[in-house]
Image (cartoon, helix red, strand yellow):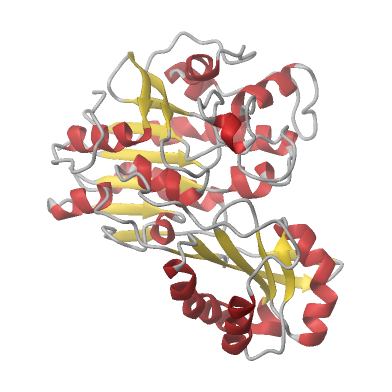
Length: 398
């Protein structure tokens, strides 16, 4: 029986979203702008020259970028030998749950709640509940911020008072940073777990625990991050497949994003390198007829939000260089699709996600142009390849 591997390169968008202007993102293009920066010598830290992604480009990555946004793709000019196209999102967000749920066949039917970009950002009753659950007299932050700067700003006061560092972003999210030893990792996870129902009821998409270790001058965010996400509003691709009696595997933060619904086995690691080893192993070991859903988050967290163009390029090239090991494990009839959930253009203003189309490139069905499709069509296509009945609005492009 055929297997499918759906691999999400978190934030690796390709521009061209027709509604980008409504999000303040007209002209953003994560892959396109990285490729241009590399070609122009503006991404030379730890790497050099044009963007080198021969394996995904051979499948059709460069062609997908050009289809999505019409921009030139220096270094990515191979004639496609795989499945290729670009997908457009309809959910009214540029966030992790919206993108992943819609790829899995379920667009978000509601408007997310966002916190205003003012200080303080959070309502008094929410702050009071955080304090009650944490057993503190106050919180730190209470604003829009990026993770590393907000920890640097409040680290010393956090260690002195024990107050959690609370912040948000342009996404529908409430994040809490705390020191793993001084505050306590389990205490932080419990705080986020117990707070989540209040925020989910208000249609805030995620409560995220952001633990860190070390001294204030040399702290490090750890791999013990955990997302407490609102549950999907309807059965997703994972439910369709598991409900048909097939094995499902989740790699990375897929378990958090889907609240473990429809997931048989979860594989996690301390880095994307660890997760890639899981992907290679599952390529060799996953059951006939199974579905593996993987997310590689460090493109977004380590390089997109910090606006690190060179780092993003290095990560893309490193991921691509490892793909022959994965492809070597795949069997006749298998399908591997590589896509993204949103953009996070490291050349763009600010530190937030960007509204973009995403590439859809695939191994296993030969050369096939699928054109412009919907996020939901990805889920429908996975279901069709597995011979499982789809339940969402998507249409298979296979």
